[in-house]
Length: 311
Picture (tube, helix red, strand yellow):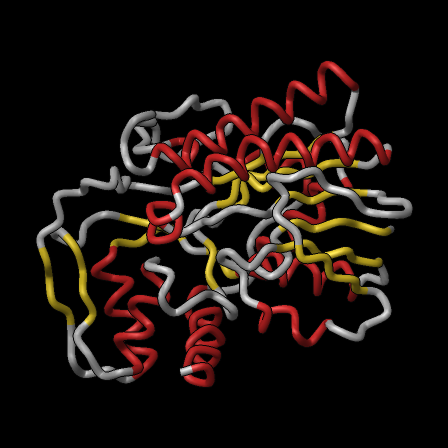
């Protein structure tokens, strides 16, 4: 296949590019570097199966030649980014998705949307299944990301129903691994950065809030299988191994040998940070035969090694 991946210089997009090339496919990577990093795809430059186009997908997208699939991964994805870039986040979820869908339709290509667990908001259902409509504050600070992705899902399904476009929607839960930005504000790079520097890890609130973390290769496997499937409704991809922020911080300190411990800071949760986040992955297991395989400790060891190198 020849596939277009928007957001190809991002954390997930670059790993996705690697996977498709490893499978013998040709990748057209697209990014405007608003949050992506050229270093993430530097190893692909010169590869005959990779072509890069610097472009903002909120503008009309043109790609010469055939395209068999469009995978739309362009978007700020961390709270620091989308709070700093609220308009751009809304535009890439709306105009960017519209343009990417238009290209897929024109090329008679499959379309896969990278959605997010954030569409569930601060969930009242636990774990979250794909039929849960969510609990989202449309006018809160995080609404720019949540609603951008919710709109992106809606227009994707509209193209599927109105035009018969073969579409796929992956709802991505907390994912970590090499090529995350140290300063992106998410808990994994925050904790690892502090631990490597020998600082106490900062836990906000009482530390009882929970998350489930999947290694990036598990996510990529799920996306790859979903694109090849014939299933058009959203699919959660994430791990059901849930742990508190206190337990997670203690694990990071243990792996890094950091003796500085943990400090607690008050948090008023003004960003609408959810108290719990864990997917129901029954659909992924049933439809795709997928389940995560990388243990948390092993994945963190790989990620910590990466951060030691880049720091």
